Amino acid sequence: MRPFARLTVAQNVKVGAYVRAQGEQEADALTAQAISQLGLEYCATRLASALTTKELRLMELARALAGQPELLLLDETLAGLGQGEVDEVVREIHRLSQAGMTIVIIEHTMQAMVQLVDEFVVLDHGEVLVTGKPHEITRDRRVIEAYLGKKWSAANA
Image 1 (cartoon, rainbow, N blue to C red):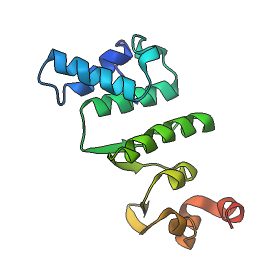
Image 2 (image 1 turned 90 degrees about the vertical axis):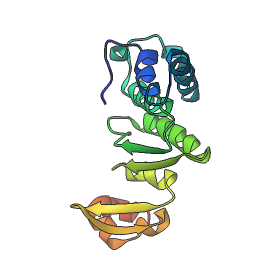
Image 3 (image 1 turned 90 degrees about the horizontal axis):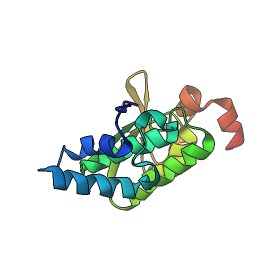
Image 4 (image 1 turned 120 degrees about the vertical axis):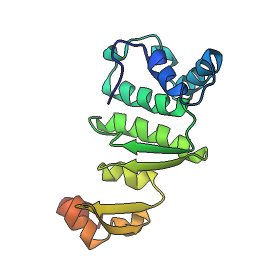
């Protein structure tokens, strides 16, 4: 995470809005829209340094959305979150996907990704190991060996 710790949530998100905005008014509108989209109104005036890890993840997601990207790239968005927090952030990402946003995720939290993604590209040491639908990937011997392990295999057999 790379928040501007001494700025508020709204100010952090506004930085992202300037990717698209032509002026202050448009930046303010894009900021408000992104904050609302992720339900961060309650903490918009708080400093980023006072946020929880989950709030920081959502703030960074709002900052990216404020720039109105055509393609959203997410890298380890779920890192450092507890299971309940993971579920909340996954719900937000899923909602964005359902609204038509194209999202590419780099993530190691396989259980969350199985619920979220349409298609996997699994890499192992920089090489494509396998591609496919979640139900195919989670049964692939190479993926189980490289990432999921015997516990996953036994629990999902």
